[in-house]
Image (cartoon, rainbow, N blue to C red):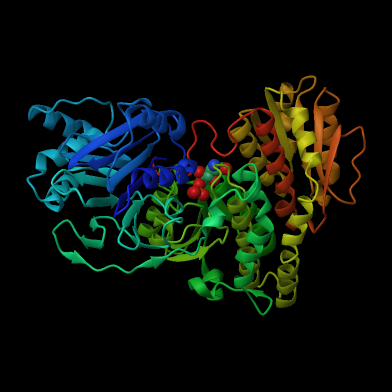
Length: 607
Ligand code: M6R
């Protein structure tokens, strides 16, 4: 999704703005631009395409912008195609803005302003806000902002500059995130902290409805009625090295390799005296005993972590769990009450549908528990209880280490629910925890030799379509494997419960079609192997992912990847690694932009 940056200080800001925008590239975008005060005038350069191919090239051709205050933007098109004119900053010589989010009533505002004589140039919803600010601006920026945000509906984060205030940046937000970075005689704005880690770790979190007035010496905050707001300084725990490739060819590969330490960092503070502990968020055994239903709501990979959670909680605690895609849950009038627990999973903590689902659950009075990776994100702040996943910044659009640690927390939750509900005793609970603690090493072992994954990828890279099959937890994992492959290799794939193939999908099998069979569940092995034989005898090229000690014969698979063994229940944490790496190498072999796949955004902050 779009990225916002801004700088005011004593240094020439063009390089700072572009450097910060580069740090936001991972969010996904299709055009970029900056606006800088140059000799008291707002000068804008913006272009369709990637920062280097578009914006930087244009700046080279037209001459760089000289000034110490400016705003910048990477745009992920929603209203109007990617083009120079639709890129941000948008405005005129008096007011210029960068915008993240969607203005729902922009047509109404546009018609009103056309009636006042304004002429529109772009197809964007953003232009209606820029012109509305210009309409209300009579010399007092916060007054203009207050009036404008009273009129607009939707989600937005806005960075704004006004012609009469060449050493100031203004910002306001509703639902979409924005932070104000604090430096020495310089201040920043950004959509997220990764843009600023090179310059500062200190920042203010702008809340919905707050207006920030930012000069090089600091920021003041007020609400839309002009009442002053005091804010606390936050300090980021992430390090700049975590947001850099560190010698790896791609962020995705680096993040896959960070999984052992991410699991360790996420689970170890939550294990007290050998038992899973949720005290930090206030979730007690009493509460866990009394919930009528447990819902797990999320999108994409986070929802797949929820699927693993469902299998685990149902298996261990014998408690039914409803997993739902956030965009479905929020509109289906779910059977939810104040006696239920709703677990919300999100890496970014800003996913629009997941956030809306959380708000719905809060309104109904359910207990909400969020597993979130980004401290200070909207979901982290709005959930009644929050447990952070300590994956560190995840830059690659394809989620790997964040998914891994969402799962790791799910294991701890499943153990605790089972213990609280007397389905396992303390001894068994401790034993399960100790097995979980071996997972960083097991995942590490999978990363010792990457050759089998590269070979498997080479077998499927020219296919048009393939299937992932599995049963039980292997099926839950297949969903993630299939999504990963689709999103970065652009090869169509589907995940299928292996036993369901015969009910229609097996007719798709043709000579040479790759089928990836996840066969880590020993209790279901013979069943899955029969399904592998069925597809193989119809021409499929079967790639099996199985645990050490399991023999897959040559009638069942053409290529086998063997991973370290553990108890069945723990295998998803290990088996996801080959699936991630098969997707990774397929993308590399196809020459794709692995970390920034086409059409995708890292953080989906619009519906
Ligand atoms: O930030 P979130 O965890 O809420 O994001 C949810 C999905 O958009 C995300 O997992 C997406 O599916 C990934 N690109 C998958 O790799």
